[in-house]
Length: 258
Image 1 (tube, rainbow, N blue to C red):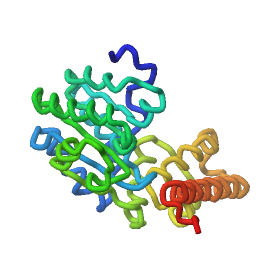
Image 2 (cartoon, rainbow, N blue to C red):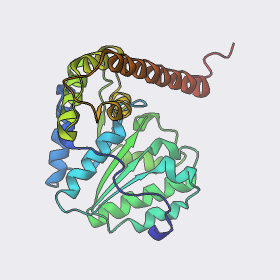
Image 3 (cartoon, rainbow, N blue to C red):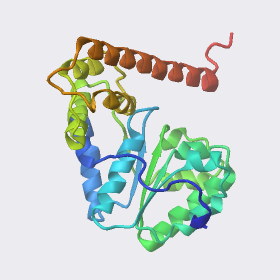
């Protein structure tokens, strides 16, 4: 069944547990360490759009790969959009670590809910580690299969930091830059932290957009024009993220429906 997948099931992006060095992430990373030694086998992470869920999920997967564990990452949203058969999950029991992103995407998809339910049962039987990520807490999920909600509620659960703590954002930004050997003018970093999006995932997405601008420049001779260009990119992308939030609210809550 896995051979039928046309999607890239490997780690999607460069990520490391060391990226999450801020104080708001300490308890979550401590739980990941407990997972490494088998004390915890199920983890449920949730947070709003662009709070760093996928980056953290990829970092956790990478940490298990470093331990020579067999790991697979899947976005349920991507699988559904690709019209994949939910039975694909039945072939994952031989994987030591299974990371399922976007589990909230299976709301309204009974077949996928049943597939995840059976995967949890198989994973418990085989002693596999399961990691879930979602925009919603378990209590907020609108699943027809109540038994799945019961299974998910037993997982160790953490809500990701919102990014409101500037120190958290700064430490993560510094860690990612150091690990990737990227160098940015301090004015850009300060502007990104103060005027850019607060959510970690959005901040790192903007960082990826900025990097090509400075990758071939002598960092001792960054012109004022380049700094201004970077600031314009930060402003533009920050606005795009804000508009995406607005559109999502309008779609799901109809808050403008008078």
